Amino acid sequence: MPLTLGSVVERFKKKFSVSGEKSAAYGSHIPGGYSRSSLTFGPHAIYVERGDGQYIDTIDGHRLLDFHNNFSCTILGHNHPRIREAIFDLVPKGFSFGNPMEHEHQLAKMLCERIESVEKVIFSCSSSEACLSAVRIARANTGKNKIAKFEGGYHGLGDPFVLSIHPVPLLLAGPATRPKPVANTAGLSTTSCEDVIVLPQNDLEACRRILADNAGDLAAVILELQCGAGGVIRLDEPFVQGLGEILRTLGILMIVDETITLRAAYHGMQSLYGVKPDLTVLGKIIGGGLPLGAVGGRAELFRMNEAGEVFHSGTHHGHPLSTKAGIACLEVMNEATYDRLNSLGHSIQTELNRWAKQHDYPFSVNGVGSHLGYEISDRPGRVYKSCRDILAYSNEEHMQIFAFEMANRGIFPMYRGQIALSEPMTAADAQQFIRVGKEIIEALYGTKQ
Figure 1 (cartoon, one colour):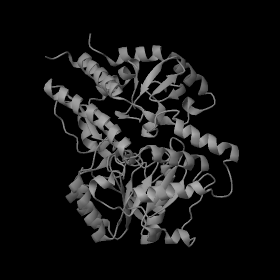
Figure 2 (cartoon, rainbow, N blue to C red; figure 1 turned 45 degrees about the vertical axis):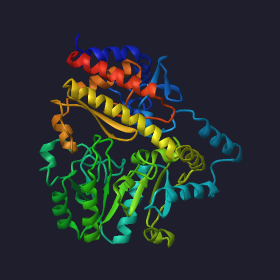
Figure 3 (cartoon, rainbow, N blue to C red; figure 1 turned 180 degrees about the horizontal axis):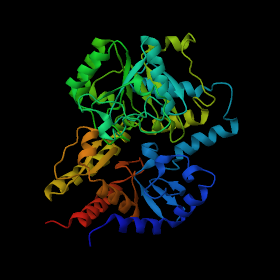
């Protein structure tokens, strides 16, 4: 019997009924029951009791293979011994001071040595804050006010960035070759849309025209080389290289947001493109699972910070526990570990894509390394080059069914069509995802010989 959205949701609600009860009860003190709206998985979040390695144990009594990993943050999985050791070593000494600790510099040095474009680093509590700091640094150094971002790009919760992550309704988003900013939340400043230029993904000539028209006002362009929240769209290498040339000619800074994509390559995803951005935003894995963000880049761009002309401070910026855990995480994530983890991601992508093509299923897996996206399309062989393609061609109901049924069958993906692998995972874990993925697609479309 074919899967339906109603049937899989009912099984989900029954399997995770305790989580549903907690969500409803906790809403009396927390709007929605939890502080991150992104945690909602259909009707409610799945509450967790603990995690160990590649698994999470839910409050409902189920163990799930975790292909979510806190939106790609926990690259070492859960309860990793090196992270525990780092934290437990620091706690008896104290971990909240009005003074710096030496391991803040140690982590900064590791990042500078690992990422070619990064000469100096400043830390914050999250990459949301780091993106705001990067924009401030760019504005201060250029004397210009506006920034540009891409449709489908996500750069945290700051007012300049909660625009056109999902360019809906399309009626307000303008033509694909000259997009207009669309607010994705209520409560934005009325000037937010005025200060942000929106660019189309993978259309170099359209970007050239838009940037040339606004060059006198644009301080920087911020971009993800591979998007996350807006759909897993990878910017083409010739496009990014061409964009870099345009920005240099026009005197506009390039900010690459590697919050997610640092997990794609040891030297950052920018190393795969051969580009050296002016500023790089970092987050997620650099804190080893604890809250941490950073801005790095050319040393000269931080001179105004050093002179006290650009303000950057926060009570918990560069928090000792986070920087200590981040050092441990980066030490584990050496080049060999990257290669092994990326090979697992590659096996999932190639095997499922080969199988879908062989059997003419409208299913594909996209992305680079250990952060991948899956799409169920209107037809087999659909290629996505922009977030507008996802909006136009993705089968949203079948995407929801796939996510619910993954959870029902013991695998926890991101609800919005993404997966992230972790270091403890094995070839058997990759094969489990492949097997369950095939079973769900066959249940949706029938078995084909």
